Length: 466
Length: 94
Image (tube, chains in turn red, cyan):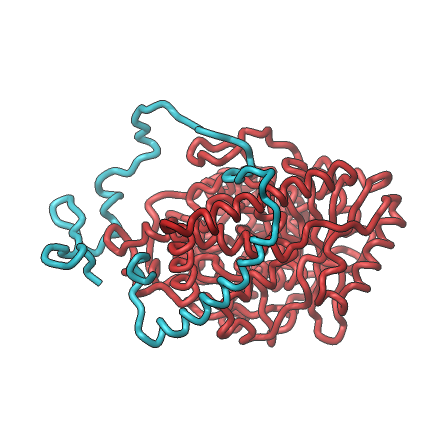
């Protein structure tokens, strides 16, 4: 990490807003440091695909707004009128949207400034950011390793202090897994909580935009701004927006927590770190039990079928006629997924695969409902291990699905989930993440627990005692 | 499958993808082990159905003709120019 710990670029979103509003420092000073960081690190890390040259000018007009003109890095699958939107694919290289996504519109109306668009696995199909058509992003914690994906650019922007806050999207792990691999906070809201309007569609039944930040408080603050009903998105919910920052101090005393997926084969090397997590929560006054959930191996299959079916339909619009380049420009991963999706939806196979997958999704929903009748929240490892090395995805047809196995059950059922760092290896500087899951619409519970865990431990890079 | 999905492939790509498909199809067979006799499919996890709006024009949410054409490489007098599909089998220019 090259940023000095006392620099403005190292401040959290919460601290930055406070500092700007109390005139402790100016926008010019803040943006200078962030721009310096970008200039010295972006060509190596490949975090940003495009940068907003007018960021400072926009910021200086926004002091009297909730977000006070802070820079926010946005994953490049969100349509932005002022910056190109490529979804990291050659099919959309040079594409300039004629409309703004709801999330980026709301952020800007609340006083945020888009610093730039961040790299992702092309079309968000992946868990590494190695399958971008514009080169891989590196993990700022250890550049021999990958940042995870598909929102790897946004996670890396946070880890390297190249932005004060960031936005990503999750279909099955794409916010939480790169956050785990980069040692940052990632919040996947309940499906339907945040509008998908203007986000390049992947799996329409699970895609969820969400904040990727330096702390739990930052994630709550951003969620306040981006959540809410939107008539432009028919799957979006009219559930009332809460003030999620009001839950930060509630603690976990008396909370019933179930820890799942610890017995999954392959997790033996990291299990002990999660046993330490249990001790932290117990010391804080929660009751933690190890509990069995439906095998996430089945979620891999459900997700594989649903995602590829929905993506084959969603990518059909990219015909190279009305906009974009032609379909031969699709990368390998996109081609693979579209073809498999078309197959599983085609006549004679839809029942065998797509409908079956939808039924197994119902089984997962029932399983979680049963668990949540006994526990307030569920926790698990976010990832089966540490960030993988560069090149790990080559030749792998299902890399992402296997890496995201522990997150897929909550993604396909629409549950909210929050990743917080829960261990750092001093030899490699790589992190493990804790996945905190809550019932539908109960982001407050996971924010409450995430904050308590963050305060009680030293894994957060941006906490004052580090 | 490549024709059905309108995805142009080289013959090398065809053989690599064919093998990967077989591997993926093997993985997803495990769903057949489960008893789904008592559940319905879940298409939409929020439980919402038929979210309608009034059938009236919403100019603030619509493109002007200029905006709609802005990203096309080939336009002519306000039209999109599409590849010639006449005289091809099945109308498939690939």
